Amino acid sequence: MDFKETQRIDVTWLRWLFIISGAAIVLMLVFAVISGQEDVEGTGLYVGILIVLFSMGGTYWLVFKTELETTIDSAGFQYRYPPFLNRTKTIAWSEIESWELIRLTDRIGFVGYGYGYKKQTFRKITSFLMGGNEAVRLILTNGHTFIFNTRMTMELQHALAKHIANKQKVQ
Image (cartoon, rainbow, N blue to C red; front, top):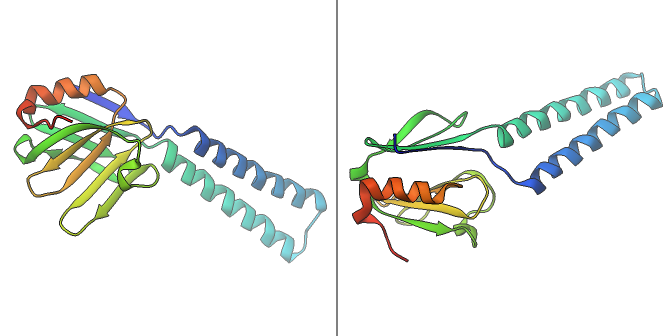
């Protein structure tokens, strides 16, 4: 194995948005209990607040606790993003037409973070954006483009250069 990276979404403002929203919902639950709503409507209010709170907890887990795993070895470029992609997918070296390191200053047409998919007229773009500004773009021989964030830019570049140096695009 030449390269291995595991990363999570690390966006501070989004994390704070979840925390503040969750705190507001907990406060709603506390005020509902203090006000003494014990009739049928009050029970429905408690259940509704608890459902929203558990849904937010599950969403928080999906967003911030899932990990993108990328590996480079002699078989190719491998990636896995459970629970969305449970099996390891491999992009063989022979499938890669070109690759380049890019900066994500303009977000490359994607809004947000995580697993993204975009189908354009003649090509498909799949992205795994975990935060940060550095990424690798792999353009396959079938026209499909993959974009993977990285926090280990130099290590990734050396590993890719070891296997497919002749396919690197120079900016």
